[in-house]
Length: 305
Image 1 (cartoon, helix red, strand yellow):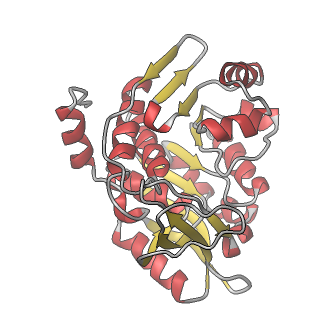
Image 2 (cartoon, rainbow, N blue to C red):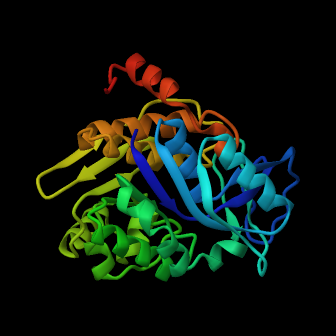
Image 3 (cartoon, rainbow, N blue to C red):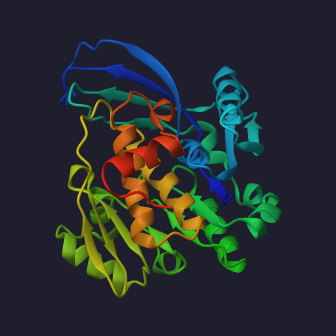
């Protein structure tokens, strides 16, 4: 079983259904209000676990009801939580998410305990890093903590899947240490300061990014290495809620890569997981199982091992 170590955020998502996203200064009357376990790190951990990975989570929650609930949900999904710390100085992180009728969302995060995840937390997980097949990280925790995790993975020759979300500028040294970088289009532009996709891709290649997997939502994905530039068309589904579709993609991608699947097959698996996640409400509640993804791939003529 592929061993996945996830260093990242754990949030409670507070979701409101709205007819359309509010404009600046506009009040929109919403419909249903729901709470869902979330946070990019936890979402990707759950996605990887449901895809068959042996997953350990490194992160923090507050010493509060949300924190207790979130840890219990991770445990129920088979994720090891011995390195999830209850922080006594900060509340559990939350995300406020209005979801429009077409399934598109906007997200506002109050990070709370996620911003207390430290380099020491990463060092405490050193024995797990040594045994991991893949490190999976995002950017909802302090950058210095994420950087420390990447450096430790490099020291142990553990491949890194780096989802640069939410986007922020990254050093060339950090980018050089990554094995797989998985931005969406807006994150690509934020990373590079470019407005043209091809110029942005070239800049990342010049900066030493080895394997770039650009997710394009309804337009699929583009896979760029030194030897390849392939566009993979999306699977057509009726989107209900795109929350965590990207997390489903990254979790499934990490498991497939850890299992040794070829890069394009791994991306197809990630795209299938993301497509299925978009057809259900919520973050972790929408994340598919390996059987569901395999059935979906088979029905589309792209079943992988």
